[in-house]
Image 1 (cartoon, helix red, strand yellow):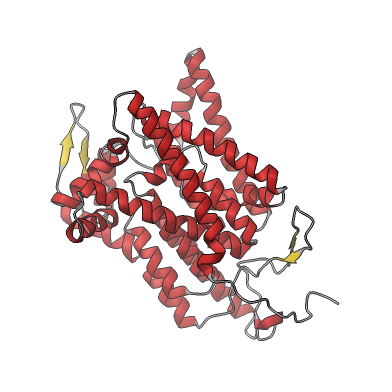
Image 2: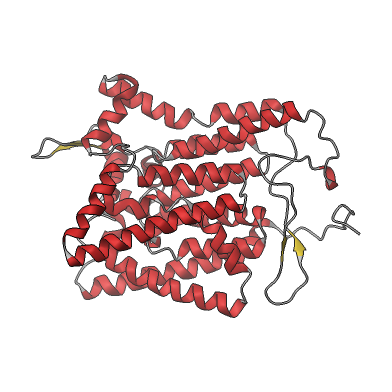
Length: 425
């Protein structure tokens, strides 16, 4: 008997019920982080809620929600910080929630972030389950929750909203829902500049789909169950064994059957509309044309220099002994990120995930932005966690629980320390 023999499919478990363990675990980890933050800030005579909703970028978003665009701050050194640098979807949602509920704009942003973080966790689970299995999906969500900068997922920032849109856009691509993928990519492009990473993933998958169609015009019946081979995922059926001795089960196919060309084209057309529309609007508003948004970012000293400014920043840490430890930690962190991406490539993750994670990583590490914020900028790059999630899923349950619990405790402590620091996260 071979894998080509038709099997009787087990009853399909509803999507929310399948994701329930991941979502419950996610809520528990984030609740621990918020509890530690509340205790830490109370001991310092501060307000945890203020740190989460009314500091740093959260203030800029709420100001856009309340007063619209046009506010800027001119610094003594000549820099101009304009709120046009902040993409509009989060402020729009804050304004909408403020209009329909008795919430301040800051509280509305906090509620949006909490709901979006759950949607992001569910999306990460859906992607990981599609590529590997349910256990790996649960582990991927828990690893995302226990990241050292995981506290940002509960702040009135746009990271959780963006990650939710990106994860579900990638899932839509993997399952052949191209119009939905394009619409979600467009919304992601209205959320953060890194939305172009989602657009790139949709376009890369679409282009390869067209190439595959031309080279394999007849794909009917190429796989058991009527699934046609696709370049987005290797045709192998690796088996994911249970660490508790249960029988091995075949990994679920990671890609959907071929879809109509018109559907793929529609998804590709929709994907860039959000980011392109906002950038062009900013250019029109500033009177500087299509490159006007780059001038706005330059006022914040943000730009893409290939990582030169970041390299100089790291090199500067080695001028003192305490700074040398910080510099070594940064280099180790960057090396870990690059190693994880290499493992993702070696494990042949679906093409959309590789393109998306690569673009997010490149934009985060090679931008001349606030260097202390780079860990936060990498937060949406969840495909980098899939190799670790797969390894954790293959370990014994007791060991996995200890690893996650320990990481959750460290993440909660670091998050409280980080937000109580002097600089923005």
